[in-house]
Image 1 (cartoon, one colour):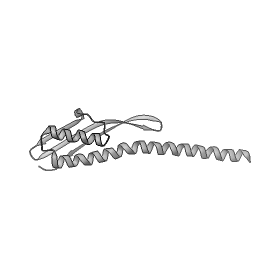
Image 2: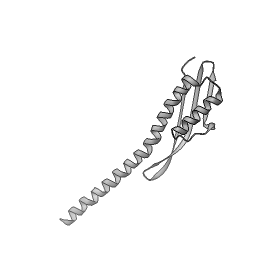
Image 3: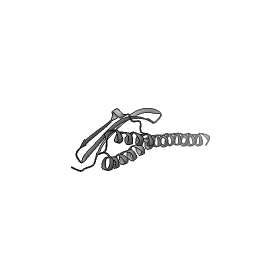
Image 4: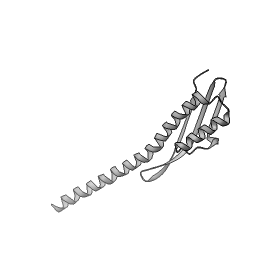
Length: 117
C-alpha cells in the first residue's frame, strides 16, 4: 500500500510542477503579447490622427508609446511613410521571452496605415 501511495504522490508532484511551468510560460508570453496588441492599437490611432504631422513629432509619440507599453524599440526599428493624406508606420523589434525555463527571441513586426488615399 505504501508503494501505491508514493506513486500517486510523485505523479501528483510531477503534474503540479508541469502545470506550474506551463502557467509560468503562459504568463511570460502573455505580457509581451498584451504589450504588442496595445502598442499596435495605439499606433493605429497615431497613424490615423497624428502621422501626417512633422516626422519628428510622430517619432516622439511612437517612442513615448513604446516606453509606456514596455516595448523595447529603437528609432531605427520604425519607418514612417507620409504621402499626401496617407501615412504608414512600420515597426519591428525583438523581444526575449522565457518559456519552459529557456529564453527564446520573438520578433514582433507590423505595419499600420490610415487607409486614406
